[in-house]
Every structure is written in structure tokens, then in C-alpha cells.
Amino acid sequence: MGIPVHAPKFESDLLKPFYEGLAEGELRLTADTETGEWVWYPPEMVSGRPHATLEWKKASAEGTVYTHTTVVRSLLPGDHKAEVPFTVVLVEPDDAPGCRVPGLFVADEGVAAVCDMRVRLQPVQAGDHVIAGFAPL
Image 1 (spheres, rainbow, N blue to C red):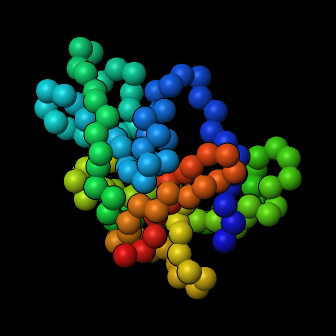
Image 2 (cartoon, rainbow, N blue to C red):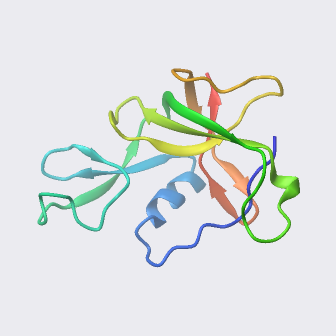
């Protein structure tokens, strides 16, 4: 399996704590400070609650694969042939129901991602940045 090394580009630092957490081996997501409800993807403003405040919290490193897909041809500009194929999974962390965190499926050759598979966070160095990776339990 390949590893996509195209660095994410952001117009703001909204997701900076997510990537800082990955670099430290943690899965960090946002939660509402008043209700404790996990909110992922972190919006600039919570729908229906414009005055809500979100905080970054460490979430469970274990979760369940909600869905997956394998990328066999890169659609990014430039030569990315060495980075494919790779499998992307959406993982629902154990303690953050409803949150679906995208990540690279990291497994031994011949092990395929399947829905409802139990996985654990395993951050992956991808060029000069770290991305979320999830390995089977």
C-alpha cells in the first residue's frame, strides 16, 4: 500500500490541534464545553448554537470502521503513482459516537478493511507531516 504525501492546505489554523495531536500519537477532536457532545468536523460555529464554545479533547484511540474505499489512481496534480493504491477509512472513535474521522488504513499485506472492523490509531508520517492512520486490533 502507498502513502499519500500531498500535504493538507488550510486557510486557517482550525485543524492545527488535530494534526498536533497526531504528531504526539493522540486523536484529538472537538467537544462542546457546555454539553460535552463531540463535534466533528469542527465548525467555525456550531449549527443552531452560535454561542457554543468548542474545546479540543483527547478521544479514544480505538474505534470502528464505518466505511472505507481504496484509491487506485491519484487525481492530484503531478506524479503521485508511487503513492497509490491506499485505503481510506472513516472511523467512529469508541467514545465519540457520530464522529467519523478519516484516516489511512494501515495493515499487513493481504489484510483488507471491512465495515465494523475494530481499529486503533496509528499515526503515519507522510512526507513532512503526520496523518491519521488506523490499524486493525
